[in-house]
Amino acid sequence: MYQNYTNSINTTTMISFTLPESRVVTLECFDVLGREVATLVDGDLNAGEQSVVFDATGLPSGMYFVRFTAGKFYNTTTVLFMNK
Image (cartoon, rainbow, N blue to C red):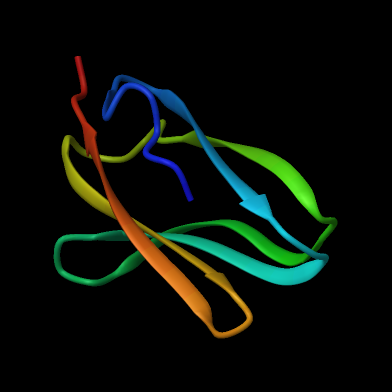
């Protein structure tokens, strides 16, 4: 999973990753207290470059953690949401 661009977002951001083979993927977003606030992906994806839009509309400003899981591999990155 690549870091979203830019790391601070107003409403939406793109989260991209590459799968070497088809996999069951979950992409979830958590607040700083560990509560799941969004499930962005939960299912089978084909091999190759993938991009998912994270729409943070309705979430309060703050830091969030996006966790990517594919098989036994997982990665977590942070996203800063700044509500205007």
